[in-house]
Length: 163
Image (cartoon, rainbow, N blue to C red; front, side, top):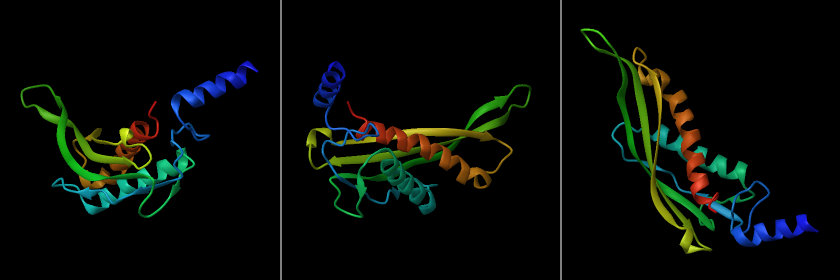
């Protein structure tokens, strides 16, 4: 009886949750627009990989059903940052880069048609380092996959993991 009371209280106090822990607020559907690349170095392939990764994480971690348009929970946005910088240098008389860093910034607009108070527009940023002797184009797919994993989880937590 105590377990039922605790469970009932947690559902009432924090909203409606799926068995996966996502707060869906009673929503049954979601949609994700293509995230347009506006950063100079961000290619359409990078934007498509992010868009698909976001759809995948929402499907895997919630009971929401994907709709191509008009979902009760809707994600849209842009890839606003995509840059490579030096993250580490070797000492000595002629300092040289030993590590580079790819940073991706995504501006996300989240629209909850059932509860407008949960809507947000926010920029998320993650990075991954790679050896300076490697060309970005050789490691780009691997790095963006790693960065996307972190970015989409953070977007998911901000939208559906909201307490």
